[in-house]
Amino acid sequence: MSSKKDIHVVKHEGGWATRREGSERAGGVYDTQREAIHHAKGQAQRERVEVVIHGRDGKIRDSNSYGNDPYPPKG
Image (cartoon, rainbow, N blue to C red):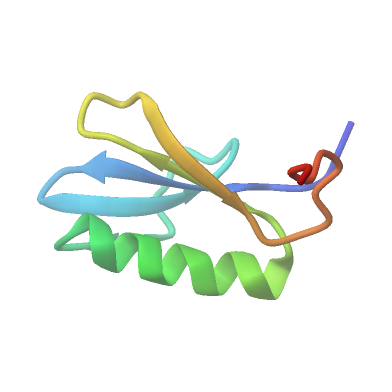
């Protein structure tokens, strides 16, 4: 099992939050999704993990890898 803990950007009371995969608590709460994504990207780049962005409905709408991607895009 991998020790990698991706960072999720999720809807939260009063705004948007960053949350480490497997955690119930928010790492940070922000007024806008854009702010949350900005902070998540910085943290993900430092820790070489992935940012998973959820929409208002909770479904994953995008993700970006900042680590060693085992399945890089071809082309």
